Length: 429
View: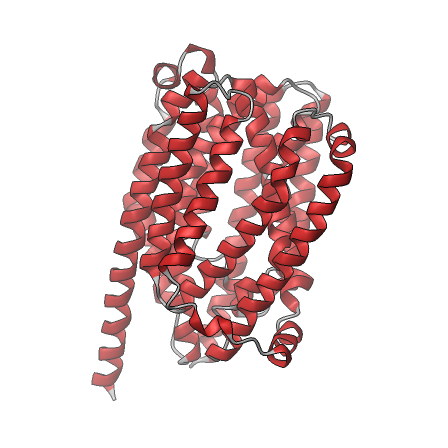
């Protein structure tokens, strides 16, 4: 029995190392490509264009969560392959409905929507919105299906090609003189091409999806109804809270300041999100499998946190003492101030990395409702802080307080997830 447990443990460790190497290597490469072009992009596009670009991405980033009802997250948790297929199909159906809905809204009321947000440039961009959301919904579903099947090579290929086309097309639009919407267009077509390539590359794996079982789809919609009930509002609140500085402060300050802060967000969160995505995808699948086998999961998280403290923390400390001239030399003289915002975000960013292994914990223990309540408090606190900063007309102060509050709430959330894991471990004794 002991030898059997040791062999299973070795298998999990070897799989974890293999999948980590595959995802992290491709994600690091895609991250390097994405960041490497920014010194060129900051010289092609002005700070106010970056501000508009990130404002638009903030808006569609929130709406993207609606496109699947968050049912795609349950694909990994499904007990059988038939249920996983039904959940995938359910996610696609919701994405199709959302496409039709947003297509009608943007076709008939695009001018009114642009006027509502005081963004005249939206009139030209809104027709792309329903297509962008449809593509995002397809990839979200496909990504989780690949995670369940351990097809991490497919995910790695998507990340790499998405980064290549995204970065290349942004530069191409910039050189061709499409300076107003070139960043948005490059982002849209980069994701579209990468998603289409993933569908083609994984066509053999996706053959089971051709068989539609209406009864099973309805059953899965009921079985995992907590995902749209709690996970969707939770995700919307999380996305809204993350994008609050760009969406809210743009009403009080010029797009140039928003552009400076947006560049800091991109430079800080691009490598963090790429790293977190790899960790999330691997640990989500691994933890689900361990729990299905009645095994402990805490050692996996403890090992991850030790690696973060030993290997990643020194880099965060190093950036804290990086002189501002480094950033102006890298991006150009018109980007003065980026270094200040990036340094304010460092504690927040490190806690985001530590929490990467915990975002799926409420799903594993069916505590989506509690997670949503925490997110409500989180969003309310950050909203109050931003309003205070806007009231005193101090953009830097508002950003600094926002980053500090984000770090504190993430530390509290991390402690809560740790308690849930500990409770589960105690039940196995």
